[in-house]
Each structure stands twice: as C-alpha cells, then as structure tokens.
Image 1 (spheres, rainbow, N blue to C red):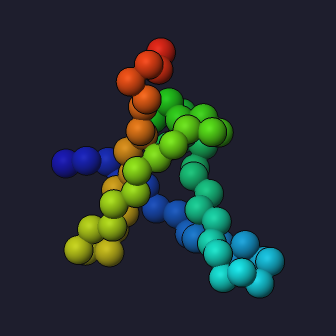
Image 2 (image 1 turned 120 degrees about the vertical axis):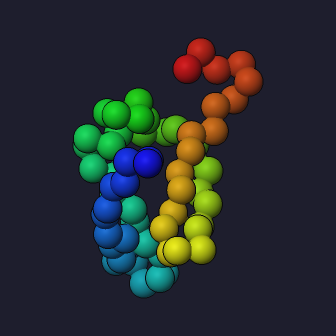
Length: 61
C-alpha cells in the first residue's frame, strides 16, 4: 500500500479564496521535491489527492 501523508489547506489570507498547501518536511525529503518542482495533482473519488512530480524530458532529475 502507498504511504499516505496528511496536511491542511490554509487560506491564502488575501481575500482571493485561494488555498496554500504546505508539505511536511519529511514528505519533501522522501520524495526529493524542492521549491520550484512542478507537480501533477489528481483528485481521487475517495477525496484524497495524488501528487506526482512532472519531470521535463531534458531534466537531470
């Protein structure tokens, strides 16, 4: 079974209605994600969200 992480979407606080999703440090380290990485976001039928890094074809990652 895939590992699951839980976090909360926080209000951006600018009146836009946007939310900010903060990732736990352990998740970032485990996934090898850094600020600026592009993620694909898929909403699942059970209400969960599946994230996957989009790696450009010419990337060294």
